[in-house]
Amino acid sequence: MRPVASLSPFLLLLWLSNSGHYSALMLGLGGASILLVLFISDRMGLLGPPVPVRFARLPRYWLWLMAEIVKANIQVVRHIWLDPQSVNPAIGRLPLLQSEDLTRVVYANSITLTPGTITIRLDGDTIEVHALNASSLRELELGEMSQRVLALEP
Image (tube, rainbow, N blue to C red):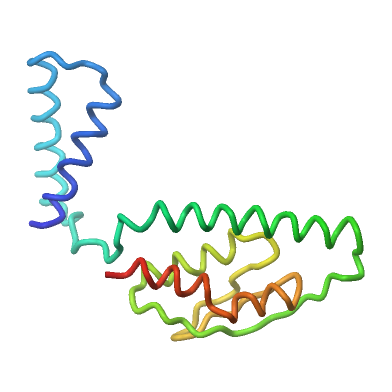
């Protein structure tokens, strides 16, 4: 029943922010609709185990990732505009330190979101990455992104 406990406040805040009505009747109807949605979702088997992520750490990770995306954009533009010959594509396999499927996907998507790198394949305990430059691949091998995603696991 834990997913219902965490989903209820989220649905309540979502409903309140979207409705803009705070009369007793509207609050009662909103509460009833939330209970109905939770009941139907539970009956359909949509409420599974809790998500294995520390949500309190997500904003800090997102800010760090946005900064990395900006830095990578500047790096890619510099390579393309200033010296196209400096592009040195590389493919490499990196270890996956994350134990949860969700954080593995977050790591793979973070690599793909960063300009100049693309996740090709998640395979067991490794991830295959294509990088526009070998230096970008070496940065991933240092493991800062992997460690930051690992910190999201409980």
